Image (tube, rainbow, N blue to C red):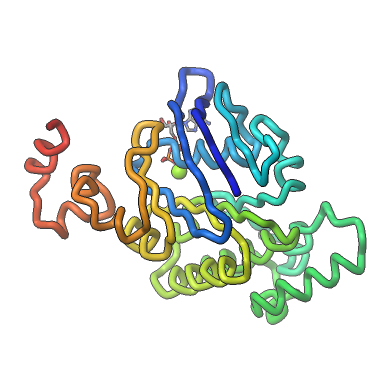
Length: 252
Ligand SMILES: Nc1ncnc2c1ncn2[C@@H]1O[C@H](COP(=O)(O)OP(=O)(O)O)[C@@H](O)[C@H]1O
Ligand SMILES: [Mg+2]
């Protein structure tokens, strides 16, 4: 449903993305992992229209969206949940979720969507009138996910959704992501927690220095011998390979 081909992009001082090719299949949970600075967040910014590609194409449901404005990308059916906390702490939970539906002019539709996401994320109803800033990090993440669903997106893009969450909150968040996929949405997420991310994923992608290095099912990528050399998520330690051995393997 989303196809990226030959994508180059950066911030003015040279390209950060250097020829990214990536496909997100309908109904998949596609998880991108890779070392810090690999360009994962940059890739998501280009998809959302926050950064223009210098070269290459992005096609979503047969329409070109490369270089489109963030608003057009939203209207096309792609919603991104950004990397850092981004609720308005002084607005209520309900107000924050309603903001996710700001493109909806039809009031009846807006109420119906609010009902739907409240069914899916009970916290939206339970804590409706509370200031969002008073919720725990995990609860705020849930409200962010609820807000993202207000436009009924076909593709939900998540940048490190587990960041800052304690394990139980992270597990609840992953369960919600899985539920989104089961209800027909496609998911593209970036995860720092490599193991959790790839276990959740139907399709795994490893990025390094602005390119896709490795691809396969989540399980395949997790088990791939090269993963050790890429210094990811404690796999070097788990595999019993010392840093020095891994470094030698990397230079080979
Ligand atoms: N706003 C920015 N301006 C200039 N350089 C940036 C900006 N954001 C990220 N970069 C650079 O782009 C590279 C990739 O960053 P990023 O996409 O955030 O990586 P990742 O999400 O994989 O950790 C890094 O070298 C980073 O310093
Ligand atoms: Mg990042």
